[in-house]
Image 1: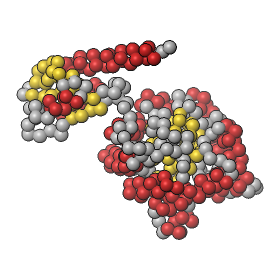
Image 2: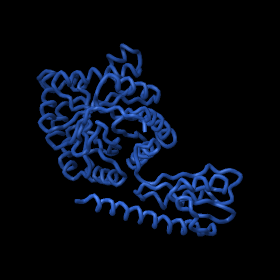
Image 3: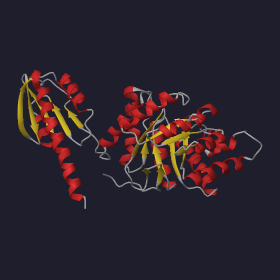
Image 4: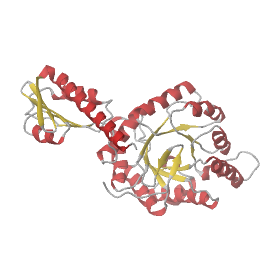
Length: 375
């Protein structure tokens, strides 16, 4: 693992972000906040999928009025996404929200009431301080302030960073430093460059993401390259994979990125060969069946599914469980030792037996270690 950038600690309810803590995977509710029943359904699904924090949009007063019930019933810490109207931030804080996402510049530009821009922001800062609520400054290439567009011509990575630093200074000048920051772009190269530059300029926790990355393969690739490159260089404290997809898919991809880089040891790492002319079993079907069997296994287990005897034994030596296909049959290995041979139509049954035993032993081992550590 590469040496990580150590940022200032941010606490969202009981979730610690930054300061060397594990990278936090989060997502965002994908329905109107006024649909409380659906919001809570998505929050519970997000928790089951492994999310640690969720963001929720607060575009108007009606949404803000629903927050109290949602916060009370939410299984996860919630970040209120606020734009323009400082009163929505105050309502969210009063409702018990755990964190805010806002841009001070946008709040200062808002026209509500007869008080000054500074007074509006001071009210938000005072309320956030009193409740111990952190603020994420979220700069986005799609909504960059016109003054930066005028200066740079278009949303360059330098423009994103200058905007973020200016927003940070506003909060710092008001004595508020409980901050994390994002500088998201739909352009992967700009996104990477922006975070690398920002990491040199501020000490705060960084929230990584490629905004509006799309759906399916395109979204997976953009997010993996953008977020993965930064994490490889030790930059990043929390991530959100922004996909035109379900909440669970965003969380799943986020964890796969962390696992690929060694940041996370959650669940099964599945290794499978790309197939070639040596294959003598229906490997595509076999891999899909194995994936289904392991998708809900939370233990840190490596499973290899190989289609022939050329690379199979080598991968079997490294995996907790390996399935190596032969001519109409499959051989099951545990830590490189052959334990079962089954005809092709019985390979999955044999695999399930071995998987259950490995999971059981893993759980018993954890319980034994726990008891040994108990005074």
